[in-house]
Length: 436
Ligand code: GDP
Ligand code: IMO
Ligand code: MG
Image (cartoon, rainbow, N blue to C red; front, side):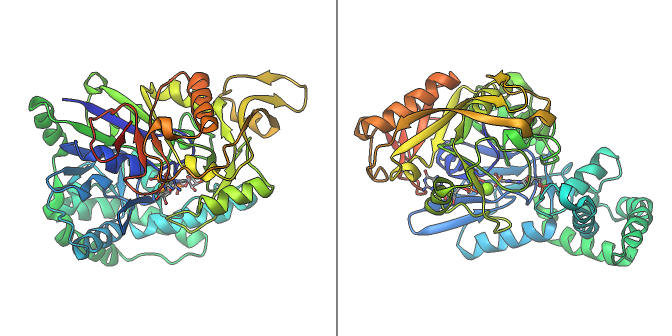
């Protein structure tokens, strides 16, 4: 039995799906533990490209049980579409399960997300407008609709009676369309018929899996710096992407977890608003955006790009208790003469230097990055099969990151395809990549 959590270690889109797909080959269960269809996860296998928002990427392996855990929020329409698309591609979805306790995003949540963003004006978060925050608000306000309510019409009606008038009042006051109870119930009925075969007590499934000593992979969405408690608040998402969130959002205790793999991009990207000390507004930023094809999978927005920030990487290593690092998109640097790593922040008001990540996020807008510069390698890496084959300067970059963060880099990704991976130390004994 090996249980592994895979977390995004930056601001999301680190390439988690590629790593989860690789590790899934040896997983019996894959559990997505938080977030909703704000996530956009891409897996490339040979000539096929799969895009996931809610379903764990482990679904591509026949026989793998995939759970959408209790910490998630589910837009039933998006989930249904995703299931249908997979079926069309010949992927078996019979191993998919939805936790009875997962929360359901209803049409009014999406309107409220839009309304909130408009009301914030130039202070907007830059959300994906998928209703994620408002669904979590209802969860914590204890008026949310859970997947189990789709199985119980009476309970559902009672809950909608309770919550809908308040939502309509809010929507009306901002000039938005209101909803009839009938309309919401019909929406729920439609998706209840489609999704009820998948809804299950997934905590019990996990208990059985632990007893049977199965390998469980916990799939995080978003990234550490978007964590509601530890990210760049308020420019965060409304859930807990960090490793601790895997316990909450799946229903397993921390002592059952063996390893935590943090996925880092070789540089940093961010979608939406919020501080980003190493963001590049110059030609290097444009190059990263273009070569890295940095466009959001969910919203199609251009991702903001910048140099690797070792300060947030160290913060991330501690918060998640990382045992391993998967470093992705190293190939994007192939044509860079110089590469920078941010090793500190300087407060431009008083020159104070920070070598750690201050949790007071109101300070961050005053930070200028302090860089260390390394030579690039100016060679193509995407076909390289083992670590020793990597250019010396690429090895130096990897070693330097490892040294600063203090966590071993176990997986190096040099292309979107499964095969474009160098595995130095396999957290879940995976076979798909090349073992160096
Ligand atoms: P996720 O949200 O963390 O799963 O990441 P996304 O799927 O949103 O974004 C990562 C993008 O980079 C996807 O389009 C991947 O196919 C692609 N990708 C992943 N690893 C690599 C890599 O090592 N090199 C390159 N060039 N692309 C990669
Ligand atoms: P994956 O799983 C990158 C960002 C949004 C916005 C903030 C809040 O693909 O890495 P939300 O809609 O969640 O309330 O928006 O979080 N965001 C992501 N950025 N990757 C993601 O997911 C994201 N999911 C949300 O852009 O800044
Ligand atoms: Mg993504």
